[in-house]
Amino acid sequence: MTLIYQINRSKRRRNLAIKVAKGKLEIQAPWHMPEATIRAFVNDKHAWIDKHLQRQRRQLDALAPRLWESGERLRWLGEPMTLKVATATRKSVERYGAELFVTKTARSQAVKEPRLTIISWYKRQAEAWLDDFFATWPEHHGLTPSTWSIGDFTSKWGHCTRKQALKFTWKLWIAPPWVVRNVVIHELCHLKEFNHSKAFWRLVEQLSPDYQAAEAWLRQHGVTVLNADYLDYCDENSD
Image 1 (cartoon, rainbow, N blue to C red):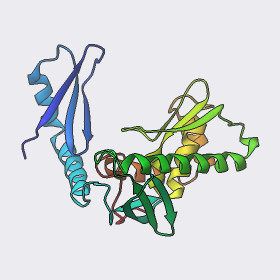
Image 2: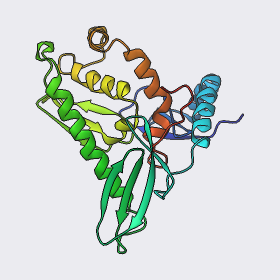
Image 3: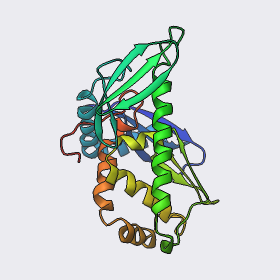
């Protein structure tokens, strides 16, 4: 199989790096590195790259592209919800059991609605989840963020700032609850260890013993859960 890839050069980069995302291959390279050197590097990593590309493409092919229409499947904390869309005099969103009912107005832009209404719902629900989580988080752990909030990241689940503020993507709450909890604890541990050192991972393991399974889940499903064109994952070998 011939590998098709894009080269992204940077004057700050010193080494070659591979990025496999959304079923596509990018090579991050130093500014003046010869293309022959890059090509040799890709050929050397061909088997590894092909394995990951094929896995991601299988995941993408197994899901229908997101159209935000009635009948599509959404997820809240891993549980499937069927989307129901209607037109009304005002926008609204309510969850009833395994169904999410969303209304849009006749003037709503087809491209943006009901997507924006649903994303706003996810953000509110995620904020409430975090409020409940931190309300019961043991103080004796000594890990208390200054603030927490919800954003919309495309390539990461959350981050911690040096001002001890935590921020997470709303897409995280598509995942099962044990995975969500692990990500939150992961970022909390950065309040003490602002790195990914051995000391950091020891702290994560102490507070989230199943963190390795959660990290594996995130690596496996990030390609579709973080992808705005899908925002879902296949159930097989996932929970």
